[in-house]
Image (tube, rainbow over all chains, first blue to last red; front, top):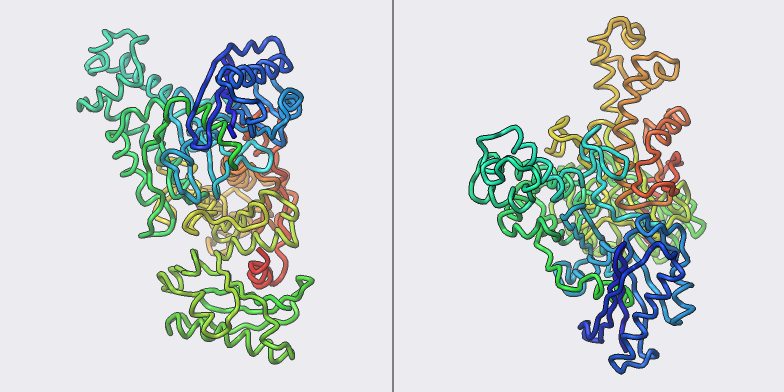
Length: 312
Length: 312
């Protein structure tokens, strides 16, 4: 038997089949074409799975389930995703008109956590948390082997832990969300400020004062090289991330908190600082709280993690 | 059959037996005597249960389980509670030497949430959260009918959501915890400041400037009467509580968030403000997040909730 996995994004659909060893045996990608409406998009997703099976001589009857990671949330097979213009779309029932197997859908960041649970940093956790630090802050929670998304499918949004009263405006409409302080976007914002306000900084020197040349990697690299202005930016980033981690520990008390996404490519340099800043955030003194680790975030994790929704 | 429940505190032990209708049929209380060490305390808890059963002509063999709410945390029957000087106490196995039935232990605030789940504001919830706003902020999480305390039993401590960077020092050792802004203690702290700094305030008038006369109820009553200085204190309280509620919604997405504890005695006056301030904190726009309600927090909830640990 095979598990089908689909990573549904605003611009592209990636689909694949995973075998019993949780290996991806084949994959494909097609444009999403959101403007055509959900019936067409779901039709294309089903078509992609069926043609993948045929090309690889796998009978469609050998597909045990379809898992779909979406850029939004789903409850009881009904999906809402702003980027797709989907509101209460009957994803499960519509997909079943094409391929009548169990259909699972969950937030794409939760799907990434499912992948980490089966193959990565969250393996064997009773409670596991993934934070992906990229353009935004994606996140997923695994409890007792299953993705946890709350009573209505809208939970697990750890980027929207509110850490500063009346803080930086967030795309969600609130202010002071964790996401506004602990992403590549935040590092770029602070890096640009530094280029403007601190002409003596290494960031100013390396970019020649051009704001467009500021990247999160450049800020992190300058910090790694010991530039104290870039280090201060990273320290602020880490301080805020540690506030979020403390809240996660005191609410969810995970075995492991895994850090993924582009920013986590800074590796041990970042990880060591995060671990240090997060120590003693848990309220019970002298107790062992979560291990904080780097996620593995392998290739095709979006497809494979989606397929793994069929395991839970 | 009967379920035994014990509410273990730093000064007193309350114990009782609950019947199949979840009614408390008998109860007793004895001093804790923590200085005698855990063996004696557990011996006394067992003795209280056995003598309760005998006095009420209930054979001890009719007791199906013992549940214990503790002022700390427990994992796998091992309990840690600073106020009792307990570190890694083998609560379950020690209790079984006296009465050999399943023994369950959990944090006392989590036990209060279990009570609300079976008999109160969290009834029927897939995900339910209780916040008790008293001297401190107690809290409990119920997921799928079971108390949730994380991987090591230390979760569900929602009072230690960190909402202000470098904020008010908390008894836990961190700064800016929700608990430091949203408890009776916080209302008294702000009320006293008002008495000192605002001689024109109703609080100053009613207390004659005596700080010891400031209570949380007095601050709330002045606000109810429309005193704008007291109202500003309550608004700050509510604003911070709404930050915590937003974080709870975005992480746990509960069906219901119930407010209990002494401060919640302010009733609808407080509840309306909390609901209004918490609106639009969830990241998905135009979606129905948690119902925010008053907890019922009945008499003997600590004993009955502890007994109900045997149901899960």
